[in-house]
Length: 306
Image: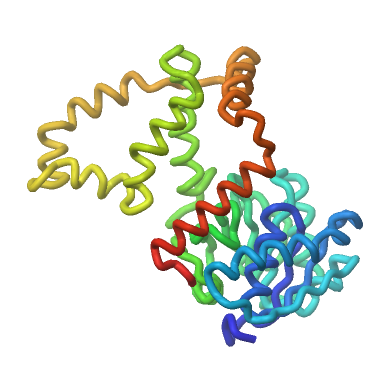
């Protein structure tokens, strides 16, 4: 075991995009990972997916020879786990039932981390007995490459243990002070995308040009500094105080014109058409591969080898 002396036995529940990515990262860190998915096909496919993702990580650091063990039942998967990474589909009814089942079959000191992108921990654990050991650990897709993990829980000791574990995997963790739908990063992303959709709906620009404006403009700065520090530098030598005093009113005027969008059939079709044009025949798999190559390059540039 090379990841952490406190958490040695890791179980992944769900082997979709997030679960497979978690499994690959943990295995690459020398851990033995037990994985379960209710789909026999996904269980059969998981070893090859994990192997491919571990190959990507070799561009960042050496693999520590962890082992993947796929099992065909949930009780056997969680019974001896120190930490369970739950990555089931984003449905409240499913999460409530699944977390309650994990609660029944795992040790009382096992940490259970759900990767929900928007659901509330208090609602998902409503029927669990030992709710304090459940936390939100929301990664950014894909977890084996993206550093961010957003954490929320009610027990600080549990959070401390979980944070130590995720940091040992090379993650950058942040803690929410209170639960909120979408956590932090997804809310920021949702706000940005809402305005991007609004610009399409208002006929301001094509989908590809709106994406290009982001890629070649703010996104380059955001990869170095967040939006608050970006505006701090926008105030020149006077920093954020000068910006707020002198450019704050212009910012408020922009806020007043931002759109509040509904995804009507017409707007959906406009987005579909625009994205198909921007993709220019590239498949989802092609675009994922392109994204992952650039993410690896960016991580190398930032010295983020974990």
